[in-house]
Amino acid sequence: MKKPAVLNEFKEFITRGNVLDMAVGIIIGGAFTAIVNSLVNDIINPFINTIFGGFSFDTMNIQVKFPWVTLMREFGNYVEYPTFRFGDFLSAIISFLITAVALFFLIKGINAIRKLAEKKKAEDPAPTTKMCPYCRTEIDIEATRCPHCTSQLQ
Ligand SMILES: [Zn+2]
Image 1 (tube, rainbow, N blue to C red):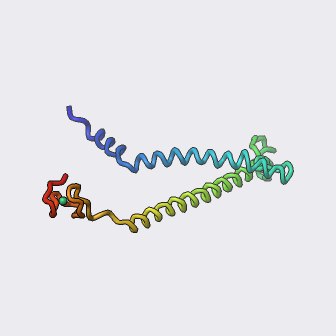
Image 2 (image 1 turned 90 degrees about the vertical axis):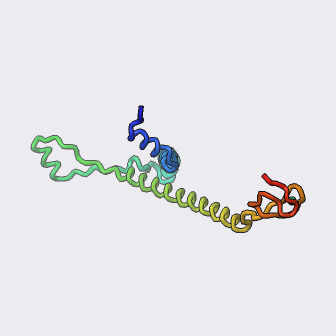
């Protein structure tokens, strides 16, 4: 029985290297986001709390009694006054900045390692000769027969 074309297509898609790289990236990214959020909510926020006494991002809410909402309520429409949680918004911005800085240093580090590897590669290029195991003379790396002792080489 012939496999349906879409199955082959899917197999091709999933076995392509960058799909797996992407999946790993997404999973690591999700885990990293949890770490950054925890850093902001569990470490930085309580620390700010000790400095500014009682202040925390969670309490930075403001409920605005818009006059039109009051009017609607007076006419018997129960409408909630909006609460602007700008503390949470600030938390999100701080999380983003931490993530961006961490990514910057990660990429900087990876680039430095890559540059080092390239430099090393440039310094000692791939060998072009090899040693004949029979007569110990230097011969071309591609040679299958030694020009000096005429031995057959693997
Ligand atoms: Zn030889």
